[in-house]
Image (cartoon, rainbow, N blue to C red):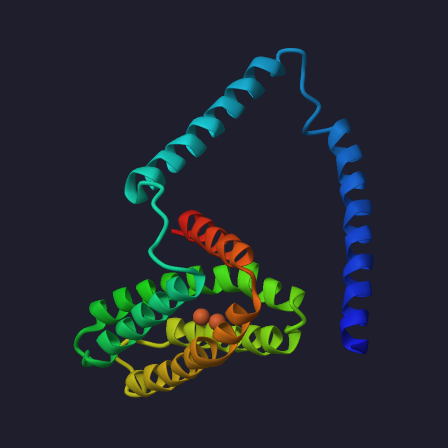
Length: 216
Ligand SMILES: [Fe+2]
Ligand SMILES: [Fe+2]
């Protein structure tokens, strides 16, 4: 508990430091680079319009690709499907040999994206909801394992894809992800789901769907 309190107060002080810094930089900006002239209005408006078009185009692309359709199933089923997809990518990686360096790089890119998207939904929605339900121990343990997932991704990104220990590293990484996924699917998520109301279940499912939409 002491650590959590400490880290909260550290966050608070760093926030106030950064807002001081912000106001300092805002006031110096007013004096220099961002001192817009009288004619800056239309220019600024055009830049904003451009940004809005860019955002709308990206939104349109996503809507077109996914048709705003929610994924099938509840939040825990969506996440379990993503576990299976990631483990399937690991299996494809393990079926390569050292001559297939391009394929190895492509599969690593896909895996990185899949795990990043998956971890985002868990870290932004499911684990905070677990903490809210007094299951902070589970949430903190699982979130710390995500740190090791990122460490494996980093290490693999630094390795030559034809390195003699590439497959061994992928195998170790798969074991970690598989164990983590089993813990979620067989223990933490079912327990959490049993405790929640139908309304909360629908809410978490909606949030996980929305997060997946923006992260894809
Ligand atoms: Fe996880
Ligand atoms: Fe997961």
